[in-house]
Image (cartoon, helix red, strand yellow):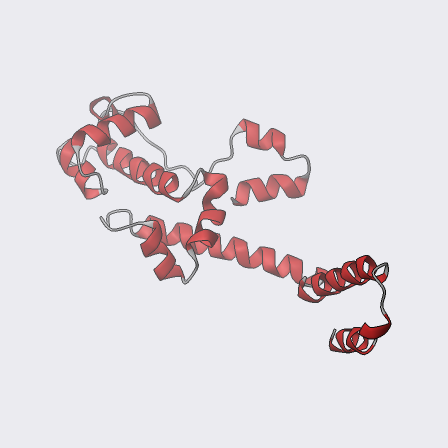
Length: 183
């Protein structure tokens, strides 16, 4: 790249206006080629993304009962930028959506546990909900019934992300399907 720029600099006096589009195109292509990761590194970069996503999911799951579980706290704990965190969770509906759905599932499991005698509001507070009304509304939207009705329902834990039928149909290849499952 340095040699290329030096050769252009040496020929500046002899270049014409007609040469400019070709030089701009060639320079742009060379810069892109220098900055783009080699093909063999693309798979490694993707694996790093999958590993980071798994770390992020594990961090969220281990901190569901922490009132200060936020995108900012996750960024600090994982050592990633806010935009990178949002990119990771985009297929899951966003960071906040992911956190809320995991909290709701954990609350549902607690509600359906016959050994857990806490009141509904205590369970809601334990999983980061500041008001019983907000918890009830979110719970009903997520599961289709009220938290009180959830008391008698048996819940089997589901994976951190279950791909919808639409996501499966969007995945046109086996690789796409695997990516959809991993997100």
